[in-house]
Picture 1 (cartoon, rainbow, N blue to C red):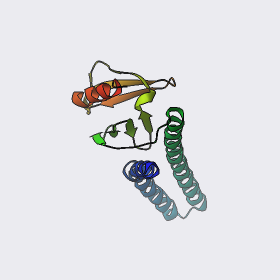
Picture 2 (picture 1 turned 180 degrees about the vertical axis):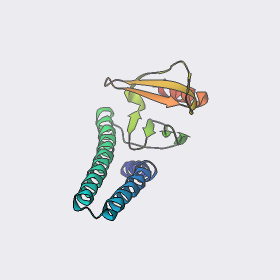
Picture 3 (picture 1 turned 120 degrees about the vertical axis):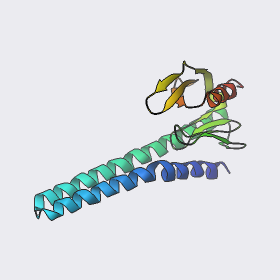
Picture 4 (picture 1 turned 45 degrees about the vertical axis):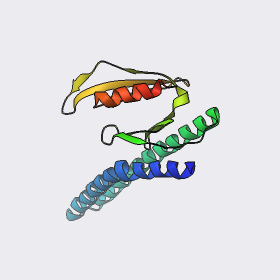
Amino acid sequence: MAESSKKKYVKKYLLFRSLPYMVLFSCMAVTLIFMASTNNNKYEFIAAIVISAVVIIAFFAVTFINIYRFLSMIKRQEKNHGVAFSDKNSIELSKFSPWLILSNAWLIRPGIFAIYIGEIKSAAIGESYHEYRSGVIYPTKIKTKSGKVFCLKIKSEKNARLIRKWARRN
């Protein structure tokens, strides 16, 4: 059960976060290679292929590093707290910025982090501010017992308060 939940969130990360960037980078690479081939210059063509390959390889590296960190974070917390990853009774707080899912015991940002409620030391909402084009932001800071600090930019005051209330149940 827990393994399938982890895979579900990795798939969501790949599908909804990584795939759009992969399509964008691929289109840019095809355009760059096409433009270089129309000039009939062998060196431009080779440079276009090399640049495209480097960008796409770097993109895959970053994507898989994020996935590895996400899964390692879950595994470490499962081991330290003697629990299994579960998204039981999960609700999606915000899908677009940032995409957050709150379950009974875990705060999840697919492919980025998953924080077990027992790992949370404190949670606080900072002073709201207006971010250009995004509207009002409610900065929510979560400190963990392992010393990490997660700063979330929540667009809804209701969701920011919900996260803080959830974190303080601990």
